[in-house]
Length: 416
Image (cartoon, rainbow, N blue to C red; front, side, top):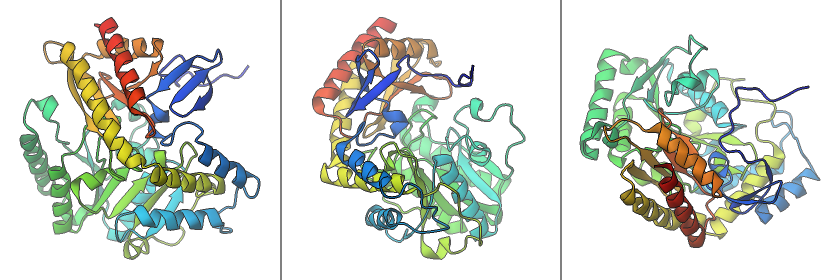
């Protein structure tokens, strides 16, 4: 009898039978508030009628039109639609299936375009589990352990972490940028450095927003040294942070943008975007893939972009994100074990800390489990597993936010 790999660990005990909007239902038809969104994927909620209709219509006409063999209309339309929301000048797109694949495509492009080999990644960043993307990942050793040697040419620089280092945000930014400057004179000379890759908010690393001054500091240094700036928007893109792109909070333009997760409401599609002059430097044959730009996924992505625009979900993420943040801070004020509440938009985290300042993963795990028992599905993250994150679909309402905060308060009270 075949079974799933024992390495796959389920975060909640739920066997999902169906989903509708912000809710998941198990086989006994018990309803759960889904504040995981499939790790930030179901941006328009579960089975949004417009996404379902678009996918069903496409399934009946063309499921797979392999895009280096033939072209199909959904991919052309999706490219045109993304052109309306991408940063000015990022006018060429290459599609694959997952965030990891898109990260590797971005690295390949950066190395080919610059003729340089090194990639600077941020400590605590998560970029995927494939060998190249895993080499860029330091959110936890579980991604890298037991598979070395990793892809060479990757160096790490600190991410500003005010809470961890018990300092102000300005001090954390100064330290991180100074360490990056030191890296360029001690480890990876600018002439050897192809790109910097950064998440606007660390995802698996603990939901730490990058201060705007840090991102603009990286942009300035990249420009000074001819280094490309790759912004990994796999989790932060398509409205998640209360802006369409997470880097919009810093008012800069990346050289290469990576998007996935929330782009198609659950269908697998990802992409990198870059200016024509840069994308044209990809070597012949270096971009392709059997399933990339799948017609059904592209149709779902078009419908997702329509829903995000028409239902003003970016604005809703900002509004409900503030409401959720305020509610979480209210819970934290009653329970000192929650040392920090942080995030942007509907990408928020609760960090559990013991009285001596060390990470408290045990209480975080109890609170996470207690929330699921009460019908609120959440995820943990952070290198120590002591951060409980909340990433509801962008359609979440004020009433649903308030319900979630109430359940969270009960769960924390039961855990401490």
